[in-house]
Figure 1 (cartoon, one colour):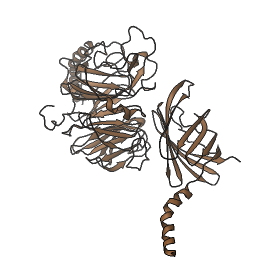
Figure 2: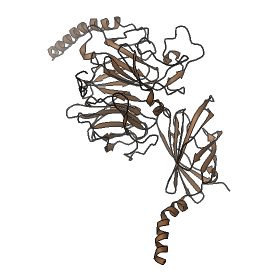
Figure 3: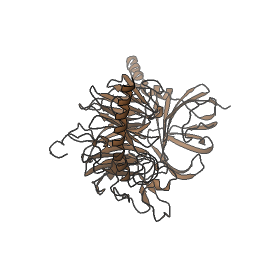
Length: 386
Length: 159
């Protein structure tokens, strides 16, 4: 009995001794100070004098407001979903770095924003490639785009934008020239049993055959399943705290074999797991994610709204790794709302309250298991690039 | 001739019936119900006013009430299905005032009137109004940043 105890304990001590230097090395390479825990994990912020990356483009006296979403199609094509621009105070301190969170007064979602530059595309250096100003009017009566995606299984790479306050999901062509589909009815919200209308949808994810699932959301507290053409098939969930019930289902991720639907039940501080027809399978308590992401290595990455930590789960709910810390300085975050990783390993984090999107790149020698790995996209029809 | 007359009446029925089924909500109404404990949400949007005054004509419906339950405000809905848009100073619950753009829209659903109100301060409201004698029922759904809210409000007509 004693022998069987001592051997695992000695192994554990040995493992701990081996692990400490790596951990210390990661923290010492971080440019962030203060706080507790591992601030940027296996990453570093390329330019600590943010906002050198993704510098905003508003007119003088204004600044980007809440950043709802980010999606990295490639290392040099990153979509940013911006919830409008905010008027700056008449005077700002000389050390103002350019992000609303610097003021530390109120979240970037609170002031009334001008809905311009809501969808822009930048390269890896943050330089503007495209501004889809032709669609700014779509967001005027809401609070701007909630999140933005490209389905990993779509060879045409349509761009999907969720607008919670206008109760719809927009599907654009890849070049942004056409709005090809609107899921839900603009400005009309339905009740829980209404499959035509949504009520404050928040997030979307796909199966390989194009079937998709919508977290719907603040209002209807349900999940709606659609076929690849956008026809609603079924819904599940009501308001409540029991299995299969929700309080603000805010994030959704689909993956595994057989495929499962992972739903961030934010208001109930848990993740719930379902099969693709809404049968309840499991719940993971103790986390209230704004958003979730299925990674290429089939893990659920969740961004916790309470702790501002990024947490890696295996598909049975075991926590494998986490990092992150609330704050407004480079590397810290204030209300991560969507994360995305490109094929080069860079991680992008959009902050709704901090009012910025940050780029993180892997530290040299970073543990690959600690990096967020974005799902590969299907090659675009008619091209060989990614 | 009689058959032709009957056919004419039948053909005219759809046009006549909805008009007959549409009530007039005009009057002064006193709030007579309680609201759910979690109502009206995070920023006070949608608090029912103790008294509302409704004026309805063939072309519009106006509701005078208290924004956030207190400050007087008149909201006008066009009854031709088109948007009504205007700008006005709007006070938050904390007392700050800003110029806010408002939009309203109304549509009939049988004898029920569905009213939508939006503003650029991120508030939305859907009121479904129905009338039964001297009782006005408003099924209210509100949206603002944060959770949505629902409530059924009952008003009685003031003498």
